[in-house]
Amino acid sequence: MNTTDVWTWVVIGGAVLLAVLGLATWLSYQKKQSNRLKSRFGTEYDRTVTELKSRTRAESNLKEREKRVRTFEIVPLEATEAARFVLAWKTLQGSFVDNPRGVVVQADQLVRELMLKRGYPMGDFERRAADISVDHPQVVHNYRAAQAIALRDERGEASTEEQRNAVVHFRALFNELLSINQAKPEAIPSREVEMQA
Image (tube, rainbow, N blue to C red; front, side, top):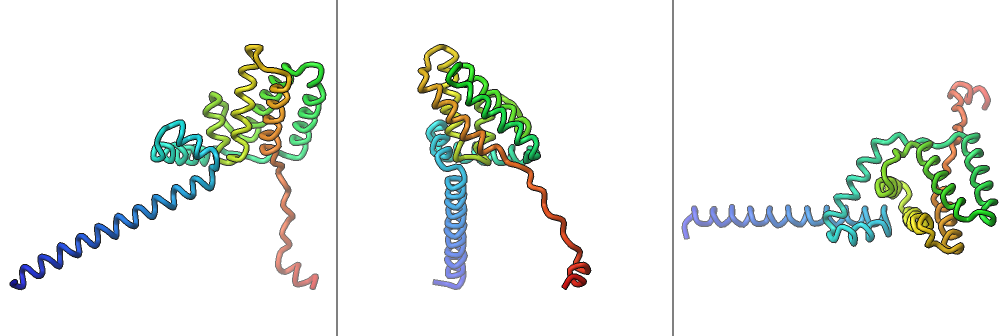
């Protein structure tokens, strides 16, 4: 075997080694991305994989949701605004016994109003649920369940117990969205801290 043949095999071996290392790095990155998305989205990850019938398409969809929601200006509520929403919810819950169907509709409307006030755009239901899933994946299934019951209720097919469950599901999302803007204490300049010591 001459020197040229040896170098040819060394180059081929090096190229194969680089290709294997590149593939291993890419697979490791993909696994980390999958684990990150599973951890962040929880059951919404599984639901999206099932719905889209492909892990790759589902992960692409979830990444697109994250990207879209990053463009929103989601804001916490001022304490007075939060108090208004809490009072509205208590009033709504108090009227359930007299008008369960009306309360389901009101709960849906109040959740939408709260989402809008926080900065979520009001698209169709699936878009709203997808947007909510990015920051609130642990309760998006409540929103989906409440919406399904609300649709059955519109057709007169939901029992009073289902209506109660819808309100409970809406309340879980409502409570999650009810983030209050906590005023941060003003920082004391370092010179004043030294003077106080």
